Amino acid sequence: MPNLRYIKTEDIPHAKALADANRLSVGFMTKGKFDEAVQQKRGIIAIENEALVGFVLYRHRKIDQQTTLSEICVKSDYRGQNVGKQLVDALIQDCKTNHHTFIQLKCPVDLPANEFYRRIGFQLYATEAGKKRPLNIWRFTVSCPNKGEG
Ligand SMILES: CC(C)(COP(=O)(O)OP(=O)(O)OC[C@H]1O[C@@H](n2cnc3c(N)ncnc32)[C@H](O)[C@@H]1OP(=O)(O)O)[C@@H](O)C(=O)NCCC(=O)NCCS
Image (cartoon, rainbow, N blue to C red; front, top):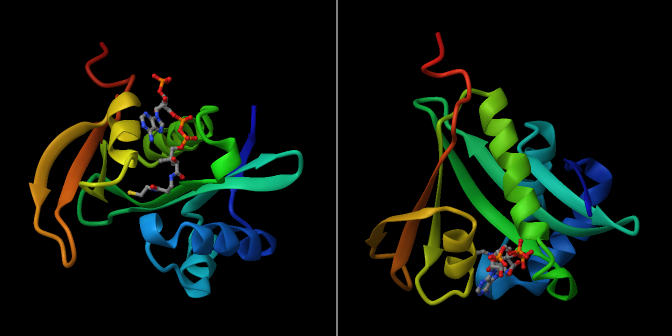
């Protein structure tokens, strides 16, 4: 079981190295992007044996109750061990705390990650033209346990 916590400044070089190694799937991520995630508390990392093995960055949109998952990545030798799912579970918890009702993300149609999203309960909402390749838009409904009670 990995440890999960918000990303801190000291994690940035490790997260950036992981992103750089997966540039084809997560795109180019600047150090500034991670800095912002630290400052705004919108990144969660997974730690195994004191090393960073995965991260998820996101944004709770102010205009509505959407949370946008912008990047998720797990170190290749830790894949298939539920690290990605646990990162998303932690994000779901953060959505509940912030009263956000759904998570949305876009994923190039040709990436294996599409199957990951499907397996952990996301639903394919639409497919749109991207700059380089078509993008699947995936959504996950965050259940609010207090809704409808009473
Ligand atoms: C996508 C990614 C984050 C998944 O992380 P992971 O830790 O391997 O995923 P998990 O082990 O938590 O998998 C959860 C479920 O998804 C399934 N799954 C994960 N990756 C899969 C794949 N490539 N193909 C099919 N199923 C997959 C698992 O089998 C598991 O299903 P199960 O619970 O029914 O057995 C990881 O593969 C990765 O970092 N990829 C490179 C970066 C990337 O593509 N990011 C997304 C860009 S849109």
